[in-house]
Each structure stands twice: as structure tokens, then as C-alpha cells.
View 1 (spheres, rainbow, N blue to C red):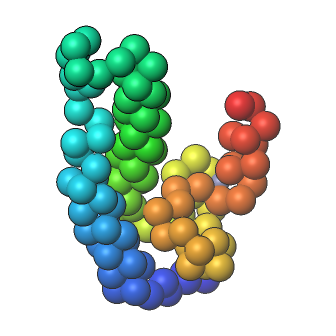
View 2 (cartoon, protein in one colour; view 1 turned 180 degrees about the vertical axis):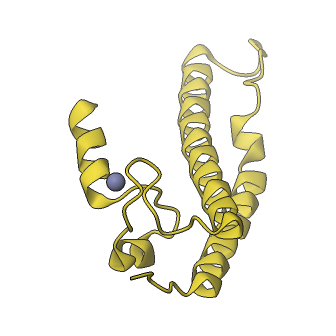
Length: 118
Ligand SMILES: [Zn+2]
């Protein structure tokens, strides 16, 4: 039996999240910028602090980019008619899981297997 997913609902969710992530990315751009090499006005400790803050901002930025990539891929799968199927085994992904995170690309079993390997 072929399941009929409400693709409109999922693409709406995905696009809303993508917009949100892109806005956040823009707002925090300055935090990820190069730490000023100004030894005269900024002390060594505050400079180290600034570098740490930047590292945190960069890590958050990378996570955001990964989520954006997952969202883009999910939107592509919707366009290709492959949405809702596990990209690893091809089984249907539980609709309740998609409701929680519409960018999911794998079923619960494959997600568990992947988690074990890491
Ligand atoms: Zn699977």
C-alpha cells in the first residue's frame, strides 16, 4: 500500500525552518568573524575569551549549516517524490518522526544503526 503523506505540510515546515536558520545565520555573522589582532587595546585574556566565543559561534554556525543542508535535501526529496522514505534502506519513515523533524532522511532502524557506529 502506498502511503499518502501531506507533502505540503512538510515542505511548509521545512521552508519556515530554513528561513529561520538563514536569518539566524545572518544575525550572527559578526560573531564568526575574524578576531581582531589588536594587542594594544585588547588584553591577552579578553583576546583569548574572544577567540573562545568565536569558536563557539563557529561550531553553532556549522551545526546550522548541517541542518540547512538536511532541509535542502529533504525539500529535494519532496520535489523528486522520494520524501518520507529512508535514504538508506528505502523503507517508509514513521510519520510521527517526520512530524517531529521533517528533515529526517532515515528510518528509526537505520538511525539507530548509524548511532551505534559513531
Ligand atoms: Zn532505513
